Amino acid sequence: MSLADEVKSWVIAGPAEQGPDRANWTHEERAGHLLKTQGIRTSRSAAQRFCSKIDIRLYRPTYRHERGDPIEQAGGRPEIAELGNGRRPGRSSC
Image 1 (cartoon, rainbow, N blue to C red):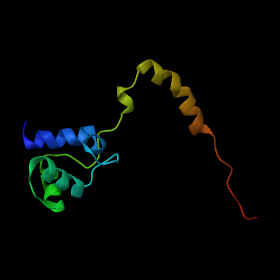
Image 2: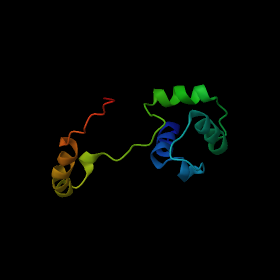
Image 3: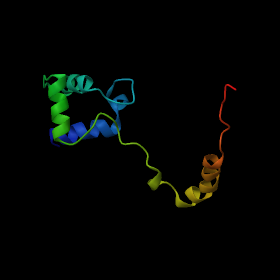
């Protein structure tokens, strides 16, 4: 596995799978994790440039509604539409 593939797998799994107790990485944490796991000493900015070069961001991919169950989505559409149709009364100081 290449280093780029390994870093991508860290992002997908999230930092909690690698040790840090949080949902998303920082570039500084990634640089520290590279030192701990690969023995590669680097700076936060170098980790940022590397991640940008291999086209990954700090955040894990999130759930996208397009991947959801189409039947459940169809059932929820009327409820969602109802939420957006109501006008809220304006506030006035008069």
